[in-house]
Length: 212
Length: 167
Image (tube, rainbow over all chains, first blue to last red; front, side, top):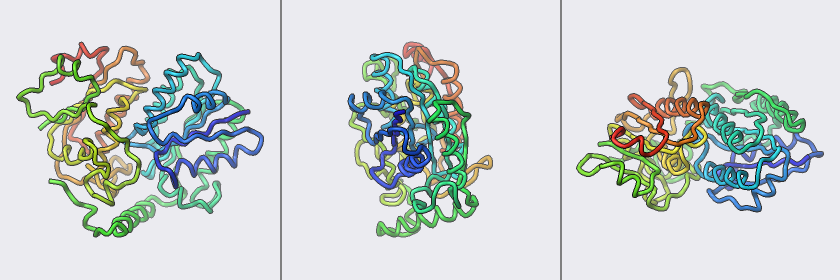
């Protein structure tokens, strides 16, 4: 079996999407042949599309941007659909992992629905979607294996979707968050913003700057 | 002041919509636009402005000065077209990185006191029922996230249908 893992984050490194895909790879095991692509700009090459369409399953992982699909990835999806329209329908199952900075995974529901619509319009088959909340924590937890500590729910969800991927089967959309209290996540995130602005030579109050 | 964000080509727009003499700032796909790179620079490097200094780097500031944002967009998989979505992605300087709760869910706090109305007009001759449903939910979600005063959404089969209906 051949599986395409597509990182849809515009970040070159340290993205939650890449971290999630690397965790998923461990659950998929050594048997499937895995190809990896990174859609980090609005451009998509014909060779990339050809190699992805040579797979039985495509797994997209991307961050939620303003309740939807990031625009660079949307550009790629429109181009990809046009290419599939041209070459004809393929027997490929699409899976999607969307993460957001908000605590609740449910925020990702509309982006998953949009991916379902893309799948249908492209003549492909929908597999499953997972909406992951508290995505901001994931890159910093590289040493914690999925299924443990704050990544317990992530491990459970990745096990379910990986089983579906290798069996080319469908599953219901799942929404998860970190095994970490919401108030603590909020405090940690806000501490992070203060640290980041100071690291850029600005003051805490500059976070609230208004342009008039 | 109103802001009108649209993805129509210049000829179609000028033929169908007359903005001359009206207090409307038009955001069109007539300049090079870079995509958001998820750097959060608009929150922690140059707060309130995008670090990418193309013609679309001050959307948050623009929103803070308007009473209504009107969006005309091709409906793409139940969402905005790539250009309109690009403008939206580049607009998050309008809110703060800090969190608040609305309807029991986490959202971003307001940076500005000013709030605006959101009016979205989707067009397309092949919008299926499920996409319409997603698009309606999307506009509502955007409205909650940007803390808009109110929102409305409408669908048109063609650009021609929108003439005289929107402004």
